[in-house]
Every structure is written in C-alpha cells, then in structure tokens.
Length: 163
Image (tube, rainbow, N blue to C red; front, side, top):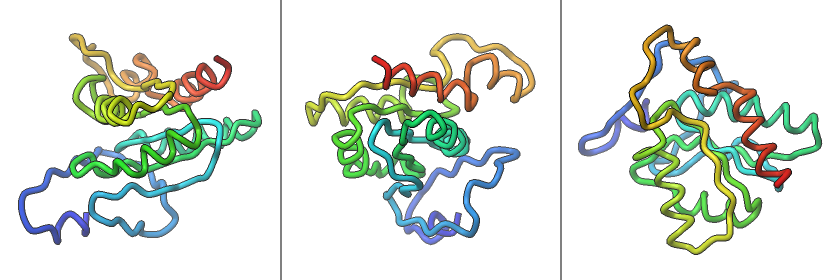
C-alpha cells in the first residue's frame, strides 16, 4: 500500500477481507514491477491478489512432484510488467495465471495479449472465474466451487506440464 500511496495521480487498490500472509517481512514493491518469489523452469505461476498465496502454495506441491515453478506476484496490472512475463514465458514455455476475477479483462487477458504480441510459443492456462452469472455464497465456498484453490492451480499446472 505504501508504494501506491506515494504515487502522483489516481490509483486503484484492491484489498481482500482476509488476505493471508505471503511474505515474511514487508515486500519492497517497485511501481509497475512484479515480484519474483520463486525460480523454476517447468511452469510459470503468476498470481494477482489472493492468487499469489495460491501460486506460492501450489509451487511447493508441484516441487514435491519434481516440477519447478517460476512464481510471480503480479501486483501491478497497470502499468503491466511486460518484461517479467516475456522473460518467464520464454524460460518455462508454460504460464498459469491465478486471480479472483473473471477470465476476461484481468491478468489472464493481459498475459494472453503480451504472449500474442511477442509471438511466443507458450501454453497458457487460467485459474479464475468464468464470464457468466456467478453463484452467490460464502467466499471460501465459491472459491472451491470455481476451482480457485491450491489444488485447482496444481491441476492446471500439471495439465500444461504433462501435455
């Protein structure tokens, strides 16, 4: 929040009600840059918001299966860290985006656009919400229903690495 508070001009900050800690200390954000949380060569997990926690936990489970994930906190969508996604996509060839957002207009769409513009031969998968009328209920139950879980991320990553 501090890096957003010092910006000159308007900003949008999205805060979850109960965001579990992902970092041991206070992360050092640079405006417009993603934080690289874990190095890997098999698949990229790019999380936004609550998706960061899922990405970190999924990477640990994937490592137990011999799959090393490159993990990013995609903290900024505007400005978007195009360099980070291009470099990791070239390195792993597989990208899973994870976000509490519909599949259109968020992180997944931005990543797909970057991949297309750079003509990268990359397999993409998303863990997000469908672009339909969504169910109503308790957040944890809805996340489970729509696959916004660690198991959901692991399943998508395995689908790309086994393809």
